[in-house]
Length: 287
Image (cartoon, rainbow, N blue to C red; front, side, top):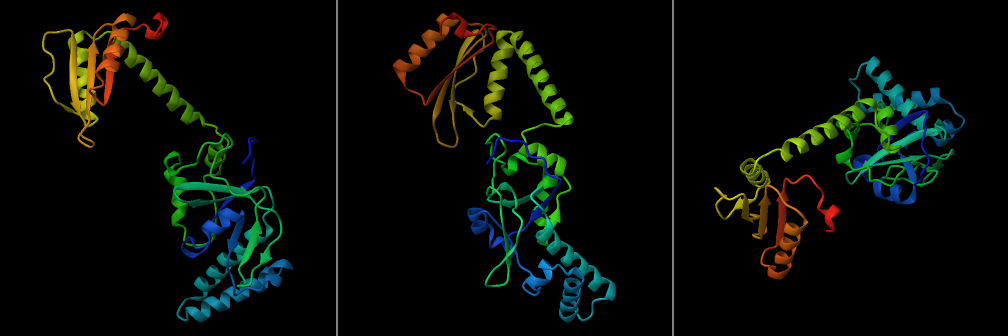
């Protein structure tokens, strides 16, 4: 949608129709939709929110005759506030919704149009987007559960409590806590690399075997016993394909080139894998 950072003053989740019935057309047309067919559009334009409150109060009373006064008044206030947010929010307000396992966001132009069925529509500024400002998809797998929990909201509009987190996600920014976690992960990886380089041939052989078995592969042949350079044949239980794995406790570019030549010549296995502990990059030696 844009490569510019966003800086909304507030953010709201909007449910596009009961059961999401208007999600696809709204996202396609770049629209925001709400119902409230029992409330006059003119009352919201004036606006006369007290009159809207009275309509909602009476409507709830008629449909829930045993409800207490406090419950009826609370419901009327709740409905009136949602409708008021939809009508009065300016272009600095961020709107979000969920569709097809992605978060969508937009800003809305001022002005509400009444539809033939008396529902109401606002037009977005630049359409809905399911990407951050760098073009990365805002898939559920990248989002915190606390933000995704809004999908269970039973009303039409609610304030986004996780606005700081939401804005950071759209702006491709990380919090201090997230950065610390990333730094710790990189430090762990670097430490493990150094430890792996110091494994002897038998320890390295066992590590490779454990990695593949934990990934679901089945070993066809026996693991080497006394040889420092061993070969493994692995079977994928899903597609029944066999992989050939050569494990070397130390290697150089010449070893790797011979392995590549063998793989190209044989083409007997679905894939050929080369595992080694030698610290230097093979690419430094011309491969």
